[in-house]
Image 1 (cartoon, rainbow, N blue to C red):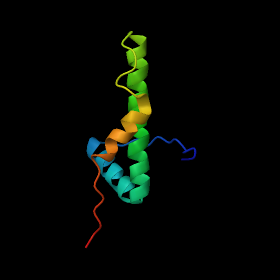
Image 2: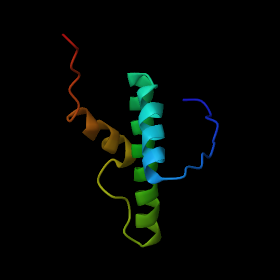
Image 3: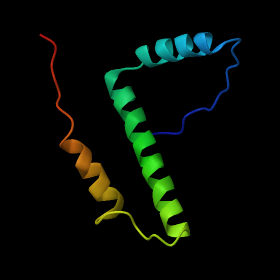
Length: 82
C-alpha cells in the first residue's frame, strides 16, 4: 500500500460527519476497504505491543504480528453475490 494523503474535513454536526464517512467508504472498492481494515488492525496491534513492552508486559501472544494476521483468516468467509 502506497502513501496516502492526509486531509481534514470540518463539519457542523456529527450527523454530517457520519454521512460523509458513509459516502466515503461506499465509494471505495471492496479491496480498498479490506486494505483499510488491515491497516487499522496492524496499527492497533503495533500500538498495543508497544504499550505492552513499555509497561513491562512483553510481547502479547506467541508469534507476534504474523500470528495475529493469521488469526483473522479463520474469521473471514468470502461470499460471492448470487
